Image 1 (cartoon, rainbow, N blue to C red):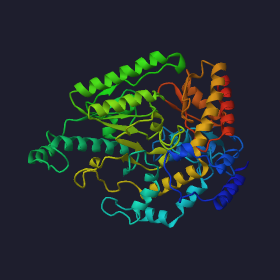
Image 2: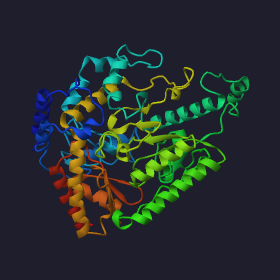
Image 3: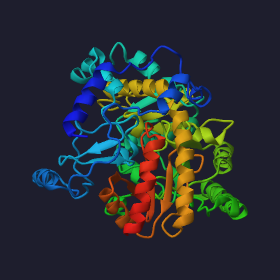
Length: 509
């Protein structure tokens, strides 16, 4: 397909695609129990008009035009981390285009952050509404001057899919920011409890000492995280990030505790006793650190699947045990769903897989939501005074409007159930590849977790580079993991293309 034909087809789809539903009440659980006929019909054909039938490779990557654009950009911007130069107006659906006319099947999706495909017509329609224009050109300082429709935007979008039991939200700018403000909420909550409740005011000593970064005003509290975790690159979050030293070196850090995340052995059914022992040892370590660390933890933060650290999994029983420990010791539980949230694991929120009796205290989100923040339930997590959780923007209504449109597309196409089904299909095909090439598909993991799948490869970096030669854009995580992060619109025919390419990559290494 020529780029001109693709562009024409895309413009046609933008004009003719039906708008997402915004009238029927929606909760996350509905994505797991409701399978509409239209969604089943849609899943049997391509979601996107104008999407290529297969990858298109016209040049090497980067080609001449891409190389020229990268060189031009490098004069004014750091390009050392560039994966590939993209041409976003030409990208469509599950395919990312470059300036040389190449179209790659994208199973990395902007580091797991594109939910419903490039140039999605429903999102384009939302972007052209008067509400969006108003949010962009009159961007409000939400804490001081919220828009008259801000409550409605939240209730019809971000809060429409709030995790069970968490009916409030504090909006933010990005995943790191979401975790950072969640940390602040945990510290403020803990000190309010120690002081006697939100109605007890600060002492003069606290106010004076805080200005000198000293106690009691500057509290001696910590956040407990896990080894190989990733929670962001801002100042506080870096002290809980333990995935790679390049993120942390040279940056001052807090003396905060870290527990060992369970290192599971695969196949899981052959190592059940060993894995259970590893999880119990981790829980024992968490409890010991909560009780003995010299800077008491106000909260424990954990990812449902450690993503940047190498796609490390743990069982629902482990997370239920973690919830019980935090309850037992009066420590808050923050679940970092920045990477795992919004449907990728076959549930809208990955922690839905755990079947918790008590929900987490806070759930942070970003990436596929295209906006960010944290959900919470306890009103006491709202600070006792204004300006304690505050900045100029406090979120972005334009991105909240976009998330509302994303939620509409997910509902219209039943994309969470769709992703669960396609993930099972893809995993079964990968199991067959693993049986054929065991050295190249080690520790295949993510069964029953939608398309949130990974495996280890001894030549991981060469594997990722070689993938582009076969028309696929893939990412890595940890030291040796190849991680698959397709969009929610990834379908069975895309899985066939991907698996065929993976076999070709192995044979070319």
